[in-house]
Image 1 (tube, one colour):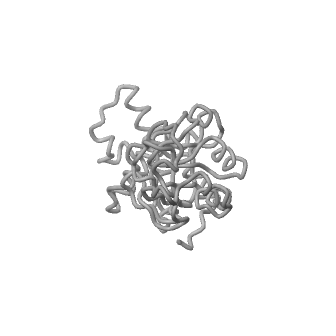
Image 2 (image 1 turned 45 degrees about the horizontal axis):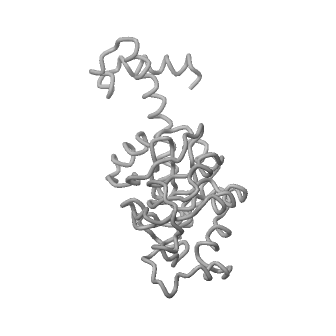
Image 3 (image 1 turned 90 degrees about the vertical axis):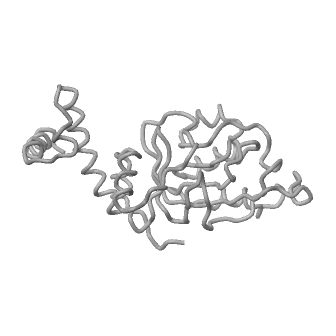
Amino acid sequence: MSNYVLSGETRNKLMGVATPTIATALFKRGFRNQFIQDVHPLSPKKANMVGQAFTLRYIPAREDLNTLDVFRNPEHPQRAAVEACPPGAVLVMDSRKDARAASAGSILISRLQVRGVAGVVTDGGFRDSPEIANLDIPAYHHRPSAPTNLTLHQAIEINGPIGCGDVAVFPGDVLVGDNEGVIVIPAHLADEIAEETVEMTAYEDFVTEEVLNGATIIGLYPATSDAPKAKFAEWRKQKGR
């Protein structure tokens, strides 16, 4: 578990940057595999999901250990994770990329929302997905799945390292989700990635405006001379950015 604590300042910065911009900043540092594969938002949200990872790991279910009676135990890892995930964190579930059975349903996700959790991610599926889509909490999965998790998944461990959509997720890593998907920022890089991507976002917004006004991308994106840099500086002054 990382000792890193996500600050309000860094959280606010990451709320305003897109996952592709973060992916580029991570690539510059040698990280090529941080975007969670085949995971999609259940519904568009106006703001990014940003929070530190709190993890739940599933293994293949063994039938004698995975009956409906297990939910009577308040320490059942799935139920316990829903009650233990800290406000402001993101519950990330390793469901082995298997959406044949649900990772959770609308009641558990509603509980996470009420508790102030920042979001929920699984590389499997959710049941009651239309209801989850209507909640305020950002939720990401592979596809809808009606069968109970017990059918195929056995919740086994809380807050250990997991794989989610082919990405290693360590407790405390910072997850950012937008309407494109979810990316994982190693905890020790979160502050500097946030700082850099705010600057990158400003320049990309400037470039977009220039291109829509007819400018060529040559020399502009990336900036290979002083002229676009000077124009960008003036643009920022005018925009107050």
